[in-house]
Length: 322
Ligand code: SF4
Image 1 (cartoon, rainbow, N blue to C red):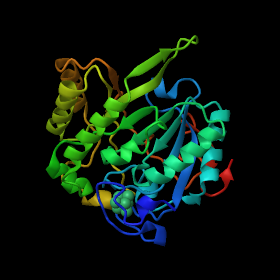
Image 2: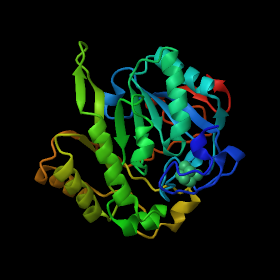
Image 3: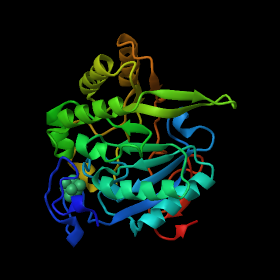
């Protein structure tokens, strides 16, 4: 039970319902923290993956619920199992024991108070690898401050700065203003620091990597987001330009997408994005190769939701530890 859930304003949706009494708001979650899968993930940016893989913990529920979400089984369909603080700490410690470079908490914006409690417990029990906060950036600065002293590095999305698009695809016209404020707060909290290991591998120690997923037919919106990054964060944070957009035919919400053509990026769009990175002089960051398959689409009903080269499962909601 977290006092902040009694009239929940834990995120900008401000549903004001009592999650401690089992009620759910936009995120679909009560006071229970639920997890769907945890394991070593090898598909993150190189300084996050390192050699041991990123110790990823996927939280059930989401306060954004994008129509095109690739993880819709857990963000929207509620696939997951309630875990106690002790269970959560055990999962994090097991990931550390398995060689994880860091603990990478995915989409926990709606559960910040409970996750803070879990992280304090895990740290008191010996968790010492960096903690990464991997979120949509649809978060209040007050909520982010709850994570002070617990999170080392931040991996926020900057989904769009177009309020019409954010209203259309995740019912949050205020997303651009909220996300800009949240990301700036993250950058204030955490200077960008990489370490060069004796094994020749560079690792993220602290700081912010802003992730932007380019959407098909929406290059003008990508340009808006990248220009904002160049004007406000270049030199203070890194940028990760993602081009893996894949239509998710299994997600019923995806059929309602009418704001852009629901297809993968084409080569011409990809080439224009690379030109834009050069034009804006964004040097500190990463960009993906253009992938033309469904390798990125996970299935969280399986203990191995990803392709085996991308991930090593440690815990699954159906069986616990593997
Ligand atoms: S965390 Fe969930 S219940 Fe609380 S305000 Fe956000 S969407 Fe609503």
